[in-house]
Length: 220
Ligand SMILES: *Cc1c(COP(=O)(O)O)cnc(C)c1O
Image (cartoon, rainbow, N blue to C red; front, side):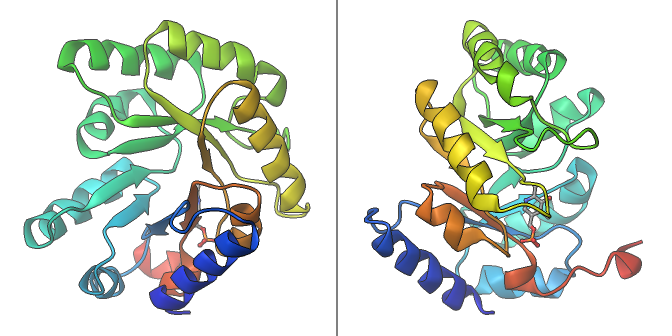
């Protein structure tokens, strides 16, 4: 699918849901993709990209950012505490805030630097043991902690279990965001972004539908 096609489908899903045009932002997830595919999307004028790993982003983006103005980078993958500083410096938003230690570390940096990336709290809506994210029953308290630390919370993020109907998870995430007064909803990927738009996503994270399948073998 082309970038234009994905964008058209998002606009259509917004209209169908009675949402304003442009209410959903498209994060092009460029992790593991070859540079020429990423460059093609930059050439088409797209500027909002998501990466999963700090190191991969560091290797790739500074060179692109010298050639393309206005690039906005979001970190989508798990953030180790020892990578917080480079992530803080490089990303405009972090979608994987999921534990107290990370929140405290981010707050320290925010105090020291007088700024902070926009933050999404990742919620493990499916309560999957292998998956990152705050458990649903702990979300309200965790949001409270982040607010106590003066962190700029943009909203909530989830990755639904692959085997389950994503709508249920999107609805749950939305309910949790609403009751916590959070407007941002980072949800929806290649397979289900239109459903996420229907449920109120403000950010959809679409990788393979834009760039093609990821070849982890070639990436090493
Ligand atoms: C890889 C990834 C995506 C994009 O997945 P696709 O299925 O390729 O669209 C979105 N969000 C996160 C957190 C990811 O790791």
